[in-house]
Image 1 (cartoon, rainbow, N blue to C red):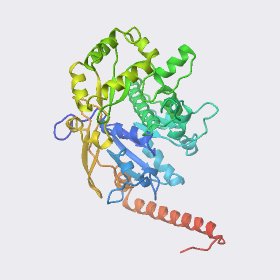
Image 2 (image 1 turned 180 degrees about the horizontal axis):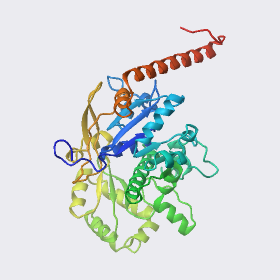
Image 3 (image 1 turned 90 degrees about the horizontal axis):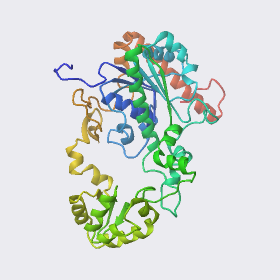
Image 4 (image 1 turned 90 degrees about the vertical axis):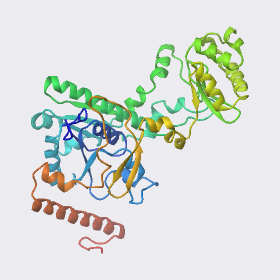
Amino acid sequence: MTSDGKNGGALEGLRVLDLTRILAGPLCGQMLGDMGAEVIKVEPPGAGDDTRTWGPPFTEGGESAYFLGINRNKRSVTLNMAVKAGQEILCELVKKADVVVENFKLGTLEKWGISNEWLEKHAPRTIRCSITGYGSTGPDAALPGYDFILQAESGLMSICGERDGTPTKYGVAIVDVVTGLYACNSILAALAARSRTGKGQHVEVCLYDSGIAMLINVASNYLVSGKDARRFGNGHPSIVPYTTYPTADGMMAVAVGNDGQFARFSETAGHPEWAKDERFAKNPGRVTNRDALDAAIAQALKKGKTAEWIEKLRKVGVPCGPINTVAEALTDPHTLARDMVRSVKHPTAGEVKMVGIPFRLNGTPASIRRPPPLLGQHTEEILAAELGFSASRIAQLREETLARNFHLRNDDLRAQLRCPPGVVVH
């Protein structure tokens, strides 16, 4: 229970150490935070998570919209993990964590002394989730992972785009998003297992596996038939009519899922004969004859406006909808009724709007309790409260970090200017 007597989130009392950056890992950490976990985001001093600089757009306070979208319900600690002092602090944070999420290159944590063997000895209940590009085995294991490249390599791009056009990527980093979801799901499973065994375990997810898994029915079609997949524009490989059609004032989406819906669709569209035509009466025939049927439907729907068709078709139980812009979708009355646009007060940006929480738990509700953090906003708080560091020790660490950063910047400048060692560049 929370201090006000209300039930806390499902993961209340659990501590998550988020060592990730970019999208898949931070999204996973945010979801765990939405569920009630206390999430500590560890970032390198100076720049922090790469997405802090990804923009525009930026708020007036300088925070990137990208970073704000996937880092709420977290506290930020800056930690130089390239030096021994930083690695020692990291080890202490890991010992106190229920879950550690990381997306470093293979072997990085091990290089810092935090191997699975170390975890078994020093943090046996801690769950480590590794998010990589290609996994820890296989010929490509050492390669870095980028969503766009994985959309290409996994086959996803080959099935996106117009039939006679070029392969097209999805409009968002969908492989990253799904990998984040898989990571969160796997962590929850590991937590459930820990409640029985008392032990943590190593969870591994990677963008490559996620991209392959996302092929779903398209992959199954190939594995069953041996025939490679192809693009259908907005169409579906196994269902017709299931695509977009022009109307008198725009376009709309129609998704007829069975023969009964098709009969009602045909009647409403003014062509009841379609449902009696041998070519179209059953779905396999409609798939075989998709070009002829799609052309006939396009001609019929051009005779009415989008809103009129949607009203008529929904009345008879035919799935359909408008093709909204992002702005239209985020301001739709249903979006607002579902609390899928929320606002949170940020220390520099003021009131920040963000996408809401896409899951509901009525007994242990998810919540937005913290805005996305400023870089290193909670460093001193966490070092003092969580690790028991004194004010003098924290001040010493700060001075060491500033000194190291100064020398690194001067080393970089000396290299660029070809200055001899020992020359300080001001």
